[in-house]
Length: 444
Image 1 (tube, rainbow, N blue to C red):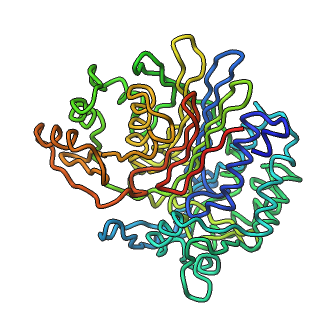
Image 2 (image 1 turned 120 degrees about the vertical axis):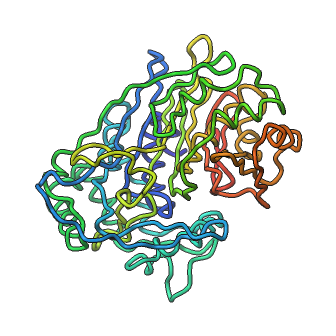
């Protein structure tokens, strides 16, 4: 908000907010991760998507990475096996990606955009209660090794409203501000990243960092209630799913058709991801989604940066891993335009394989049901997996009855839970962050 008030563009404000997330939301994201950005330019009504997700390492030649470290993360009372450690680390893209967003669409000097995050890194931040609940679920990965210093000081996990502080992260942010994003891909810090990953059994080398580039990717679109949804093609095929929604979108009868379009035959994975959506006074929109996976538990010495664990994310290993190529992702920052081409909604979500579910339910709320953005994000959702629908507490009984009548097995959850995603959105109907993950929406 301060960046917008200082005359910054949507891109400036979104980059500043993501950098702040790299300090305040480290249970979800960080400079060692990757992501995607979608930008809507009001003057041209053009939509652009940038891919700065993680890349497969190995361009320096064949290296035998060590075994990954298996950890059990408990979700819904059941263990989910994840893999962390040096062998799980892919080439990070967050610094390069944020730098490219700023280069293309930013107005303020780069150091001013980094300054809020650098200030937060010096003082630390209070951990929101919703993040503390995520930390409890993900502690085997996040409090692993050096992570215990920040997340489990004195042997006790941080609780809500307690101080989260990463020693050295202010140094990293100051270097980012003064030397630019390239500081993490070459020179002293690039060498530190390579050495740290290799010493922990990973495969990243100097050639991997030198070859990393932010890529523009095709943007597709699908109609929804007279509007047009613009996004990249993600692993969940969100745009295709929107195109496959039933013609009659009235409640409660739409529920079985929506569930059929949403059905996901993958596993249920927790997914640590975060999203920022910003619209400025000119109507430009910037939506950025980033993630660390669970985090590898491999920290850059003296810099307070946890590296990603993407090579240990089984859901993302859907094809042969070729050195230098991007890994697949569920992340899908999107914008919605009205029939005249103007901006209607800018939105994105966290939640791994539930990102699509969370986004589509939110868009149905705003564009079809006519509710405000805060109401659409906060209301209960359901998520389809194979022949089962998982429904949050409070889902309309009529929809559950329609789903059961259509043959779906229903699992009713006792609460609103961060498993069902974490949307942030700005639109004509307001701005909001997801209460499931401590989200916030603000308007100037």
